Length: 226
Ligand SMILES: *Cc1c(COP(=O)(O)O)cnc(C)c1O
Image (cartoon, rainbow, N blue to C red; front, side, top):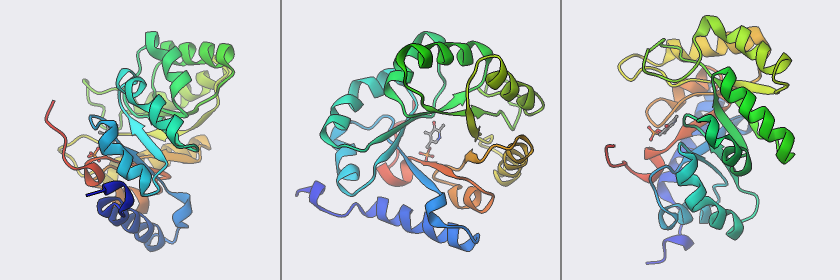
């Protein structure tokens, strides 16, 4: 069976739900970007989703994305690739080369490394600051109370334009208060974009203002446990 010539049912269903959630919230569905998170899936599994019209994808590892995306991008113009996983400064060069958006700026060392690469490559991915809204010690992201200062330093000291904020709520908590907290912070800082919401909670995120929802398993199926 040639999957590539068929509608991708899971993708179509998520698109419908994204649009419905936006309308329900009195928002234009166009104001919500669906980022299809293709981490752990190989090109053969991504191609049917591209064939069904999806053009915006997310990956959480620079190395993995570098392995599969150059060929996929070559095959289909107009693709947008988002880095949604933690970035190490020694991968900043590759990240700026490969990605159109980076959602995980969360410390000065990374901001400085990205700024250096933007200057030398003449390529400017859209940038989001990741906020650790649950203040979980093991989780990436800047603490909420440090966010305003960090965003200011990104602009004033590193010369970076920050478009918005991103969060990953704690798995064992209701996500809505975290989304609301991120939206409030962004509003206070005059940032327009909000990357929040995954397979289990993207409709809640859209109701609270998400402009980018990152949906993986609901489109691609479940991933093997790491
Ligand atoms: C994997 C991942 C997602 C997608 O998660 P699903 O539950 O599969 O939709 C979203 N955001 C980040 C940061 C991720 O690492």
